[in-house]
Structure formats: C-alpha cells, structure tokens
Amino acid sequence: MEQYKSNVAAVMGFLKSEGFSASTISLHKRCYQELEEFLGATNQLYSTYTACQWIEHNQASWDYRKYTGYKHCIQQLEDVCHDGHISSDHLCFRKPPYDLLASGFKGILDSFISDCDYGADDRYRISCARFLLYLQGKGVSSIKSLDYELLMKFHEEDHHVSQKSKDVYEDLIRVFLRHLASNNKCSFGLSLALNKLLIPQIIRIPDEEMEDYPVSDVPLLVWDEVLRFLSRMEDVRYGNTVLKSSKHILTLLYIFLDMHQTGINETLIWRWFHKVKPLLGTSWKQHRRTICQFLIFLDTGMVTTESTGNPSESDSVEMLPAWEKEALSGYLALLKREGWQPSTISMQKSSNLRFCRYLDGIGIQSFKEVTPEILKEFNLQDEHGTAEGKAAYNCRIRSFILYLYEQGLVDDPYLYKALPTLAAPRTSIVKALSKEEAASIWAVDTATLSPKGLRDYAIVCIGLSMGFRAFDIISLRFADVDWRQRSIRIIQKKTGKALTMPMPVKTGNILFCYIRDGRPKSDSPYIFIRHEAPYDGVGRNVCRNALSRFIAPHDGKECGFHIVRKTFATHLLSGSVNVERISDSLGHSTNGTVYKYLSLDEEHMCMCPLSLADAGIPYKGGAFHA
Image 1: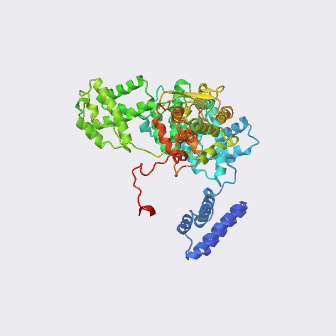
Image 2 (image 1 turned 135 degrees about the horizontal axis):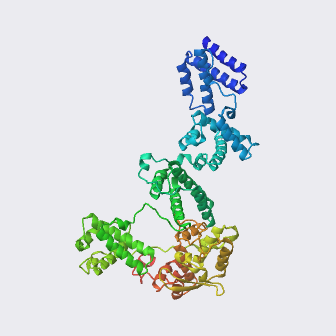
Image 3 (image 1 turned 180 degrees about the vertical axis):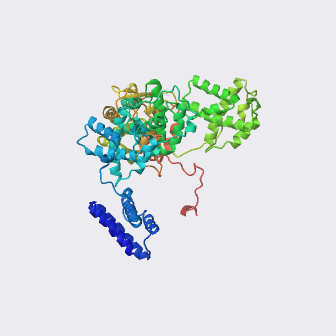
C-alpha cells in the first residue's frame, strides 16, 4: 500500500508542477482516495486488474464524465507504476482544439468564419475545431473524404457534459457543413444527417442489394425540389404538423439517395421505405402518403390532396383466377356504368370476392360447375356476425349469379335461388335524447367554441331541429340554403326524394355564425369542410364525433348521430303533430316507419291504455273475487 501512495504522490506532484487546473487535480485526488478506501474495505493490494474491475463495477452508477475521468486517472497512475512517468498519450490537451488542427483544416475553418462573419461568435470556432480535430484523429486529411459512416460515428463518440451541450455543438457544425456544401467541398446531405432525430432512422441498403436497381439515366434528387414541394404544400394550407412530418421523411429519403449516390427509382424508394417503416412509429401511414404525393409532384408539378392509397397493395380482384377475374370485373364495371354509388359497388365487390375465393378453394374451374349443392355448402360455411349481414351478402351474390346467367356463364336460370336471403325480423328499442340532453345542447354558448367546434355545433343543431340524416348534412351546399325563405332543400341520398324543410331561426343563426366566423377559406361548394388541408368535404363520422362533443355517452357507449333524427321525430310526436306530417318531415315514403317512435311518447300513451280483458289477461283474486 506504501508503493500505491508513493505512486499517487508522484502523479499529484506532476500535475501541480505542470500547472494543471484545480478541477483536474481535484478529480485525481477524489479518484485515488475512493480507490484507496475500496482496497482497504476489500482487504486487497493495488493491481492493474483490481483497479480496472473497480472502474467497470461502478460504471453503471457513475455518470459518463466521472467514469471517463477516473479511467484516465488510473491510466496515468499505471504509467508511473511501470515507467516512472506519465506517458504523453495519457496527458490531456492543454491547447484548444483549434491550435491542434493541421493547416488545411485551419484554413477551411478560418474561411468559413470569415465568409459568414462569425468572428465575434467564438462558439463556431470551438465546436467546428472539435469536429475537425475528430476527423484528423481518424486519419482524414481532406473534408472531401467525409462520409455518412464517419459522420454518424462522430455523433456516437462525441461525448458532452449534457445532451443540451451536444445539441448546441451539432447545430453549429451543421451550419459549417452547409457552408462547405455550398462551396462543393462536401455533400449537402451531410449537413442534414447530423441530427439526433434523424440518425436512428438513417438506413443503408447493402451494396449487393443495390445492384438490383439500375442507376443509369436516373435523375438525382435535388434538395430544392424538396423545398419546392413543401412550399406547395403550404400553399394548399397543410398544417404545421403535416409539413413537419413531410419534411422529416423527405429529408431521410434525400439522405438515403445521396448516401448511395443514386437517383429517383420508385422501386428502390419503396424498398427503402419498407426497411425504414418499423422505425417511423405510428405515423408511418402519413409518411407513406407524403412519399406518394412527392412522387406525383415530381411527375406533374402538382400537390395532390386526393387519397393516395397503398402503392404496394394489389387489387383483390386481380388476384383471382382469370375465369373469375374476368366475370367479376365485368360485373363491377356494369354497376359503375349504371351509376351505382361507390359504397354499393364496394359491398358488391366484397361479397362476391368471398364467393369466388370459396369456389377457387374447393377446386372449381368454371362457373358452369356451380350447382345448388355447392351454393348450399358455401352458405353453411360462410360465417357472419349477424343473420342480417349474411342475408345482405347473399343478396348481392344472387345478383352476381343472375349476371352470370345473362352472360351465358351458368346454365340454370334459377340457380341463384339456392342462396337464402331471409333473416328473422329484429325489433330494437328506439332511443332518443332526453329533454335534459337536448336542452344542454341548445344552451351551448357559441362564443366559447373554436372554429371546428362551431362546425360541429352547427351540424348537431341542424340534425336536432330539422331531422336530416348525417350524409345529407355533410352534403349540404351553399345553393341548398334559401336564406330569404329560411329553408333548406336537399335531395336525400338514401331515398333520392327531394325534401324542403323550414330552418328555425336559431339554427339559421348558428349556421351563419359558422360560415362567417368558423369556416376556413375554401372554394369547396360544401358548407361543412375539413379544417385542415386539403379543406374539402368531410365524412359521416364527423357528425358522430360532433355529437359526442356535446353529450355524454349512453351506457358507456357513444351515441350514433341517428339519435338526433329520432329525437326530432319524438319531439314532433309529443307536440301532437300527426303521423303523416312527421313522415313528410323525415322524408319517408310511407307512414309505417313513424309508428315505432310512438312508444317514446309516454304522455300520450298513458291516455289510451288497454283493459286487461281486451288484452286477453284474466283478472282474478282479491277481496271481491274470493
């Protein structure tokens, strides 16, 4: 132990005589004292192995600065033990990094500071000299030799006291790299890549895989194209969140293409996206949409706001055998020519795909082989959540089979009858909003609502006071509202019938308030639109979400928007409006649908009770029937 203390005294004497800072001397003193206490507590003598084990054992509990500092102290102590003096390799630099740079790197840094007029801000000199000194230590003599691999190693190995300090240094180094790129001394992508948010998501594809993607005659991606695309997205009024997300994924794409020195190859881009997708978290769909939009922009110069879909997804019909694909494609095309709604065609497609896949699965190779027995077996194995759903699917398959007969693809004109389409009638209890809930909706102060809140409130008020269906509300156009007559005229999507309803004054005021104060500026003919780019029409789910904003869930479940239509009908009933008038107000073709609402009119129902005798219920017992 005396030899240990003698070596420690030699190290401390050297540090003091050479003028090392008080913090350095204090660090060595604490290290050697703690090591001495450890050796005494464990009854061990000093050795290289014991000291290293002590360092490694405490690494998890020490911060990085203490761990690396103590390790350096032990290295200097080892030098004294073996050589009698501290090796120059284990002496800290007492000169600033700038003074240790080679003349070439010094010239580059001086030129940057001079060109950008950063002489008064010494942070650039300090941070960039640290970066260049790292490159110099890795044997790099020219900035042109800098590549992405070395840059990411610098990010990993350049340790700082705090993450904030590291972020500041890298921000300043990025400015330096952008300056070098503007003078063609390094790639511009390097200035983008030195970013802690991007580095974990930078993907490199092995060279042997890259050989599968030709790069000749393929245009390189220019960063200005990315900026122009983002500018156009801003012009069509995409929000900051989408703009930020789009810039992130396009920066990663630019870095990937620049790293491999390859141009824009769509197959390669989607191969890259497949690899980077697991690193993008839950926002990968938005990133995929941005890539689709960007590729369309490069081709057309326009930013599309339409749905871009999944570029890797194949049409399910295309996956069928040729004999099935040709027949089903022709049937769906016929429906489209006849003017059926896309939702109806989608349901037809879904139903008949299930039927075609079954036929293919049991080895059928022609529709002429289909028999009533095969249809029966298909029906037995075809499971659905409800009997109504099964009947709806079978109804559409029957229509397809009739089409097949008309095309001469089946011989039996009555083959379709082998599929049943009947389901037991189901009666559900009609639910409506209570008087208290309706009153709470009308009591909302519009002055407290956001622009989107105003839109949602106007939707709910129109449904509650005029009984329109959700689809008819979101389809309202400015031309449908007659402000002079205080009415709204629509063509009902469900029935195709025209319906004109008086617009209550309060509802009209709320609608006007939304149009004037809440609706974003847009050329869309629809009154209710999205409040984020692309500012076009909304879907029916907006109506349900709007209602949930103003009333609490029923029995733990959110109410469907149709409940406001039912509330409208029951309020008319409670106001003694006759059934015919209510049916007209709802746009029904018959009065039968209205009768189910009668059960909610408890006040009037109590006025016409049936006697037990009329109901066939015997009344016996009691004091008078002993």
